[in-house]
Image 1 (cartoon, helix red, strand yellow):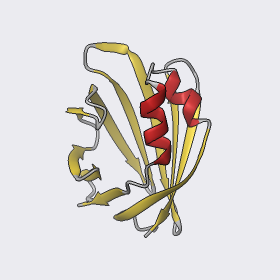
Image 2 (spheres, helix red, strand yellow):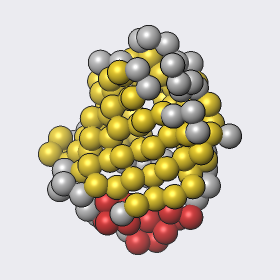
Image 3 (spheres, rainbow, N blue to C red):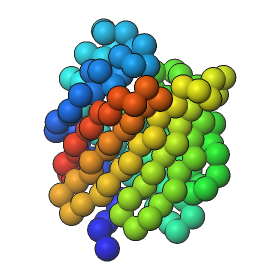
Image 4 (spheres, helix red, strand yellow):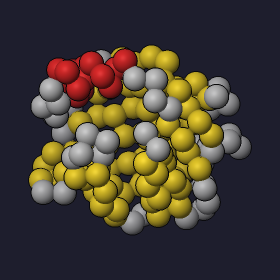
Length: 132
């Protein structure tokens, strides 16, 4: 089985500008996100939960249960995660508007992580990370 816990550094993206624009993210913030080398840290993975940290802010999710939290962009969202082997799926929506959502898949490999998101407008974006 592929190890999920670890630190992952972004190395490339596909269509992420359009993906974020569909959420009305300002161009300046999109530029910061795309230039960022901030790693994603995955820790405390069990059969029932996982902790994901971005910018030193960790959030622990229990698989199958909805969790409310704030993104680094300060958007208030709620997510439900599921795990199937080396794949973690997220369904995330704004807390105050469930019609604005994304479905994201984290696929872990021996070399890293591929994050593929599809938003409520059907726009897909991909971020690839290498394992550090």
